[in-house]
Structures are given as structure tokens and as C-alpha cells.
Length: 425
Image (cartoon, rainbow, N blue to C red; front, side, top):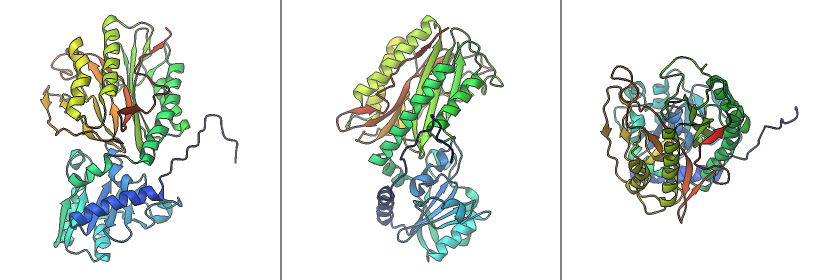
């Protein structure tokens, strides 16, 4: 074996058998309360890997497929690849891994029948919520189950399952801490490389290389924008013009959302840079974004609810005459999850702006959040024929936090601040 390169890091970040037992115990407690004989869990690498999160939470495997999870006994995973490829790790939570390809519906029918589950109630994850229609349980699989097992009542279990993941274990919080430490390398690499004339392609490549070398999963998400009029979490080089060959110019702002995944857990950093001097409006936005983030850190504590937190984080924007485009915060774990603020859905191509009322959730210790206060202009980019819904410019500054018994803790507090990094012109 060759020598370990200087950039390689080794973290002990495997989930333990105790964590498996905690999760499976929570599932089986709820299954008994809901009189479920079995649970069917699906997961797919879609929606930025988030539609696979539920399956990963139960199996500890970064894989697509279906799980038959009985109230008693060992579960069975049906994936594309056969067992020897799946169970290469000694600590695999689901030793019974089989290929279900190409007839996954028939495989699930066989798995239920093997266990004598030909009637009664079977829970399904997920048919409701965001991922019900956006990466949820496939219709064709459901149709096969209903046709082959007509006496089985398939029942969506999203309502009782989602709250199980809101309070994180100490092991889960540790995954965020490792991912936050990796981000220091990523942010530092961009700061070193980004200079006048460097293209966005080079900077994107720098982000991917630094993240992977430091130990994050290669499918960690990046949203990247650069220019003098950019909006948060909307990639330049993708939505508004082709290619990734735009060189940095003096006065340009780089706005990013950098997500580092460790064992699936996403530590998110909304970081911005400016090359040389920014104009007066940008400078005001930098200040307001930092004020919003700090207001959230001061306010977040057990007992406060999502609506109260949003109002406090929104106040600096209202006072300065700016508005917002995406939520100020959202729950974080193996995906973007509850609790969230009342999301304004303003990214419709036909210009609609609607309020989506979500019930307020009260914060408890060990909930993990991403703070991403975004400050945007009230005027829009372009005319009615281009992008009437897109703010002319804006940015986000924020990162992951965990609710503590006394307040909240910024997971990268030893090195990260809600500040725009100044690059030499």
C-alpha cells in the first residue's frame, strides 16, 4: 500500500450497532402503536439524493432499492446489485441483501409472503409530504403490491415517521461536526484559487476536489453563482446561460451553497466571496445577511417555535428594505427536513407568490438546522419573458447549527463567521 498523501484525512464516522438498535426500536414502537405487521421503505438517488434518505436512515447504506422491515425479525433489502456487493462492510445493518431487479414489486410481494404477511396493515414510506410526489414510492411497485396482495392494507406512515428523525442522537451530531470540519478545507481552497480571470469551471473543480480529498461523499451538493447580479442558490452557467467558462472580474460576487455529506449527513455552508470592491448595495446586503444569521443564533433555544424564529431573522431585512427568496432555515439531517419556517414559494415561472402555511414547530435539544438567511432585492431580473420570479441580486450567509439545552451551537464556530470573504483584486 502506498503512502498516505498529506491531504488525506481519516475520520471514525461509522454508525454503531447501538445507533441501529435505537432507530429500529423507535420504528418498531410506532409500528406496534399503529398495528403494522411490516414496513416497506423505498429510496432512490433523486432530488439531490434526498429521496434516498429514509432508506439510508433505516439501513445505514448509501444504496437504492426497497426494504421489507418486519415488526419482529430481520429485515430484507432488495436493491439493484446482489448481496456480495452490498454486504462488503462487516458492520452492515442489513445482512439479508438481495437483488430485486428488475421486478421489485414481485420481490416485495415475495418478501411479505415469506413472513406470512398476506393481510392486515403494512406501512409504506413515503407516499405523502414533499417526497410523496417528488421521488416517493413508485406507482408501478404499489400497483403490483395491490394486485398481488389484495387483502393487505397499504398505509402511508410518513406522519409518524418524520418526527422520529427530528431530534438527533449524539452520533448523528458527530456526523455534522465532521462534515463542518471538512468545509474548512473547501472554503480555504476557493479562497486560494479564486482570482481575476479564473473561470467558474476551475472554481467548481476546486470545490469538488477539496471536498472529496477531505473525506466528504462525492455526491455532496454545490450551488454556485458568480457575477455582479446573481441570486442565491441559482447556478450561473446552468439556468441563465450555457457553459462554465465565465472568468471572474473585479467587483464580482461569488455566492455558494456548499453541502458536505458524511455518512449521508449534510453540513451546509452558504458562503460568499467578493473580488476587490463591491458596490454600495452589495455591501449593505452583506451586513444585513450577517445580522439575520446572528439574530437567529441569539434567538434559537428550546421552547421557541419556527414562526418566532423566522420573525426575528426576517426583521433586519425588513428594516433595510430587502426581501427574501428561500427559507431562513430548515431542518437538516440526511436531507432537508422539518422543522422549517413558513416557506414562501416564489420560484414559479409564471410569477406566482404564495404562502404555504406550515404548523409551527417548537424547538427541542438536539434538533439540527441549517441557517441560510438570504437577502435579495425586491426588483426582479429581466422582463416578463425571461425570469419574472428571479430577484435581480442576492446572497445567503449561513451554516448548520444544533439546538442545545441552553440555546444553540454553530457547528463550525471555531473557524466560520457569517462574513463575506474578501479576495485581492
